[in-house]
Length: 406
Image (cartoon, rainbow, N blue to C red; front, side, top):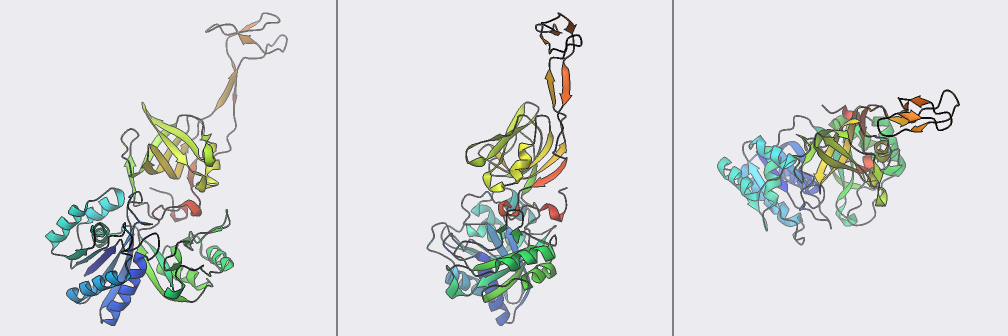
């Protein structure tokens, strides 16, 4: 069977992955076999998400009725029902649900009624709490098929420590990154000197290591020194895969979806209030604003080097009329030039315009020239891919250390 759970956490605490890890252990004690633990990130732009919009699925061998009862018991025991925005869902299906539902939940928006219709058609066991919105994520997790997948080991705190400052040795995290990158990523941000993998919210997670396989994340985890953990769980995930991106065309983008968009830079990047950098890209008569916000740090320096005429691919979420950049490819560089009146060959003075379409004239000797002086500006920016730093990377965004996007 496949057990899906979603929407059990809140900004004040709990974590759906922790609840899933606890469930896995209780099922094992009931003599069931947990074959896989899966962490599925869904559309990051959903406005009613609590934090990272993650659902979990467990692949289990055992009695489906008993597993459903245990899953509901744990949700009722651990979910943060005090939060208005926490609306858990539990699904147990004895066959994988339609993959199209998962795909839509990652790249678009789904309705509760759509999830219920799919669950009823499959004869699945399910229970939604409060407004039942968690059934969407739980259904999507059970329907998921990961063509590309990564791993994350999540280390959880002892319950009595929840909400207190975390004790994780900073130097051991940097050492783990150096020893295992690029097979693991986003443990720390070396360029900006920031720890990334330790959350700041009052939930059960102590830290998490992301990477290409269970072996690599567990190796990095073994190097980390910290307070005594409670339990640990290695998850198969769609994190770091760009699963949320769809091909888009300027002029046809929809609010709240994430895209790959091709266009030509239409103006000089501008730095606005707060250090946010913006520029437009265009495709024919249509244009769209691209944003590199202040948290993207050194990525903004790359953006500022763009000039009108550069051919780029922008990747990110389309929100409030802008593409919020996660990655960018400079396909080809324009050859920017400075055009100005030529220098007179007779008296070495710079000429001035002699009127529209009339060329240039030397005011000292009266000599004429028809062509301006054109000088190419050298570019320091190179064609290729650029990405935001680990501190600003979204869960689903594929880091370039995993290879260039297709």
